[in-house]
Image (cartoon, rainbow, N blue to C red; front, side, top):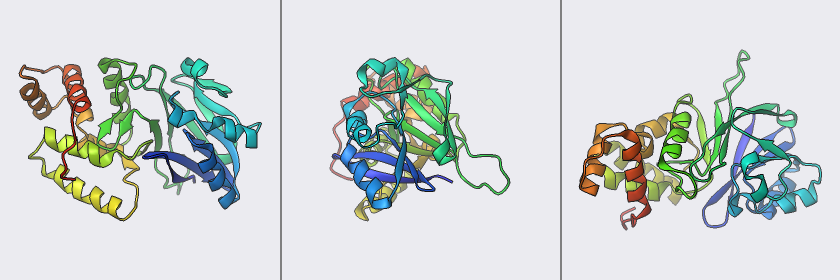
Length: 273
């Protein structure tokens, strides 16, 4: 069974450290020294680096890690290989990789939207009797707790399709996103649905986690299906909210999603969280 540990970096990034029997892999190591410090403290050997997309806060530590572990494979999106220095293994959606040192395999899901070549790593549990592990999803900046990534390169239709793929994963899938954005995302979600009591309860739960210094992630796919407005753009209440906000009727789910993303892009968080 893989153990997953959050390594905080920068202002709000999480670098995810996966460990098993003295071996480790890291997802989106924006800061190499943070990872090296964690490896030394835990007496771990780095067996793999997994990259979701080309942004520097996800790739900036590759050089330092490869200097310490020259033979470590660096997996990442082949479509962005020219923008990721140090990539050794080019991946596309539908690929499957095995990291023997972790005893784990990952399916690669293409999730364009935030960037055009963005990928996610999905680890399904084994079917062995007695294995109670949960599915794991490392989705970079595509899906967040309560939100989704900005459309820096892709279209709303692409991101809608990408999120639909992730939403279709098993409800118990644990979602490891790359930023601590949950409270600001929930602030926006409650502005969209001010009468949603489940969102109000979630705000209080996350506020307590953060007050205790505990990350608000991972979340789960089932949890996001219930609360995340960007996974619920086919619901009439979301269509009504964006139609009222924009002053014109929006009914098509992709159009509703695009309107939500525009709204969020210009939204200024309230001082209530």
